[in-house]
Image (cartoon, rainbow, N blue to C red):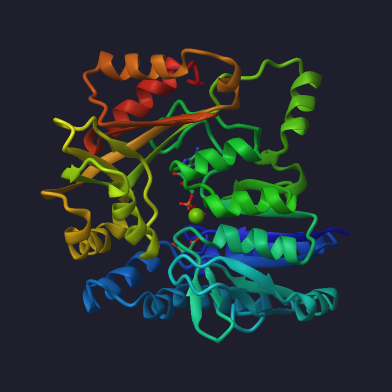
Length: 421
Ligand code: ADP
Ligand code: ASP
Ligand code: MG
């Protein structure tokens, strides 16, 4: 007998019919003799709808009230799945974030899980009851509802898996695994049988939304076995243990697998795009120590994550331009913070552009190979795609380009690095 956490995303939960299919998959997992906890997302599109209501109510909404609104989508699907399982003759109950509880910090709209109380959950699972847990939501020490950031149900699932020491966390979604790039953009994308935690972490952080970044970081830290697989399977599909999804593995495990199969490691594992970035340019910022700190300190205090940063060479040693990107969802707040701090920063003009995207290539092979970035720049130049900003890490190169060119760029790079299937 194994203890398994099964997570179902928004497309898998969109409507009664699909929830019934999910319930069937869950029931079969339990009938195979396992203890099962299920983590669910809101129905596809529902969280977007709730986010829009919040924006309509107040352009600079209170994040604590936003959480009360957007957490409701998962409350609906967890109750519906529990009912559907009951209708199929299973014992099942929902456990809302505040009921377990899943305690988080108070960074509303992007809260971090601190602890999960698992005793009652384990007792109910041991008694044969299927636990259905709404993803994405938690509660602060003082009882206010929180959410974990978009895509956060993945993180809820891994946190529950770590909390109940599950043998595996299966993430069921609308694709049958992790691909070399988004298979909905590039038809030639190939499915990866295995991907390392480190590569998955980097891919997720640069826009492969198949898994939320924090979910991968948590799985890596807690050693949770994570598998990505499709929920769009029929009743006769083999058990999850033998389904051909993607397994997230350690570096050593991957090296062993590849040695057994006498496979060579690919230089590049995958390519990701992120259209949810916005660019901010501050012109004529005084070129003196502390100038950059005066920009980024108030942004950090407002909990806004700045991504790519470039500071131009100073003009006549008196001032300089600073360009950076922030999540598009935080652009209005970024502008408000920078306007409020204009006096201390001392810039002349602020311009913003939300029609930008970031394209990144990721692969641990980069550590030992030169020329990865050069190939990227050459391929983009060959089709006249202009690079607005660049950032790199040990296993990643990212560029910021015009949002209209992102799909072409991903396709070009997929071919250039020999990833086409
Ligand atoms: P869920 O609602 O199940 O959480 P998401 O929409 O969050 O599903 O994530 C699944 C989607 O991620 C896929 O439909 C696919 O378009 C996208 N995606 C982006 N990059 C990749 C990738 N490298 N491999 C697989 N899917 C990817
Ligand atoms: N429903 C939330 C979202 O759309 C969380 C999730 O699905 O993972 O972001
Ligand atoms: Mg998701």
